[in-house]
Amino acid sequence: MAAGSSRSEDSLLEDIATFDPGSGGVHLPELCRRIGQGLSLRWAGLVLADGREYVWPDPMPRSSGRTQSKPLQAEGRSVGRLALGLPAVPLGLQRRRLLEDLVDLLGLLLSSVPMQAELDRSLHEARNHAERVAAMRRRTFVERDAERQAIEHDLHDGAQHHLVALSMGLSLLEMVTAKGDREGQRKHRERLLDGLGKAESSLRATTGEGSALLIGEGILPALRAEFNSAPVTLDVSEWDAGRRYEPVVELAVYFICLEAANNARKHAPGAEIVTRLAQVPSGLEFSVTDFGPGMGEGLAEQTAGVANMRRRIVAAGGHLQIRTAAGAGTVVLGFIPY
Image (cartoon, rainbow, N blue to C red; front, side, top):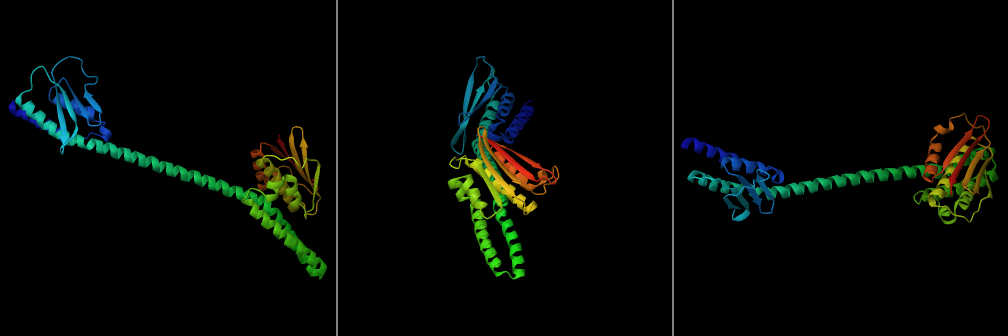
């Protein structure tokens, strides 16, 4: 019997010596069970230095009886204590020695639990920090991509208007040069220089979300400046030039009118173009009409320019309509409730 008991005690010591408390001590209730059953106790509990408690069985029996508490130490510092619900029959000499050996083992075993918990917390914080950084980078990428797309749209809607005019002006300059018309050359050079200045201003305005004139004085002065040397008629008989709107509304009207006029000049060169601005009781209306050849039903919707215009007017809370047919010209109609 003594040899069997010794083997059982050695087995318990080996079991405890190799026991893994788990992250933050998650397996310590199981350790209490092994100690309690190994020593035939009524219950067993562990109290760590930071106040955390573990007990077996859980809930602990309410029956009265003798108890004992053993301090647990490692390298001269307290790491907790072992609480025991002693059996009715006192522990024999071998069990008492086993208990003392267990106390020594438990001190070493539990000394790593706070450090592991701190390591787990540090790892958790590091993972959270890494996730926050990754999320921030994703947001930054999305914001930069959105900004890049906005700049692309502004370049397309604004500067392209002037670049198309410059291209047409160069073609005219070549024609008058071929004819030897010096006076015509001089006039076209002046127009080209003026167009270059406007294109430069438009490019600079792109980073400022619209032209300085639009920001400072509103839609009508900005469009007048843009169409000053272009074959575009402005109809503003129902427009109050002194009234201002939210920036997103003014930007939408400004860029859509530029885009529509630019498209008309490309697809209907030489055709009459009329841009109309009107304030009605329900909101703000505008249109760009060209009396060119028009295009087949549905073709207009397939262009990138129309997609840009719709994106802008939706952002302003309005809607856009394209009316066109082969041989009947094209009308771009916009409405923003106000």
